[in-house]
Length: 238
Image (tube, rainbow, N blue to C red; front, side, top):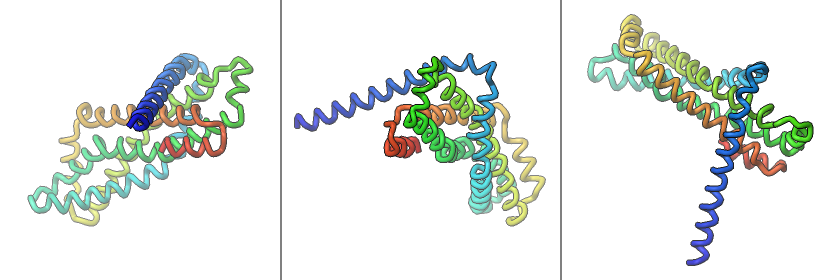
């Protein structure tokens, strides 16, 4: 019994300590944001690395998710004679929920794992230590641009996921199922609200992008500086 309590206490203390280190890490990184203004090119490079290079998987996934939504939504709405509302169902599902959530999952798998591996490898090869020896703060110079780049890239990816998904839903609804094209778009325009629906999805995607990028960077920075340690950190990130 005492052994079980000791293991439980050790696990709890370990988790608490790790959470504390993660929040201290975040505070130090956020302190480097003001210094990024004159070097915003570093952030642009990270937006390209995290966002542009993830476009293919985001677009393909969004297209098929939109197609499936339209097909399943039609099978449900046709029983009630409400197929003209199919565009609203597809748009709201993507903009409010699936766009931010699915986009964040794909972002974590593609960009998050890459960030963890990159920072972990820099730590394993002592590049971060070398920067400290040259009086350069690696949290400000290396980590902060990646965090800000991920926060900016994630809402854009979620918007692209939703837009491509709506196009996929349109192709299935109008081209395959025979839904009236005018009703599909007009109902969507009338029922989707900019502030209640679109803004809600944007806020969610910003929060998801912040959390995913923060965890990915912390896992890489906190990884054991060996090849095995980096691989384990990458697995924990995903």
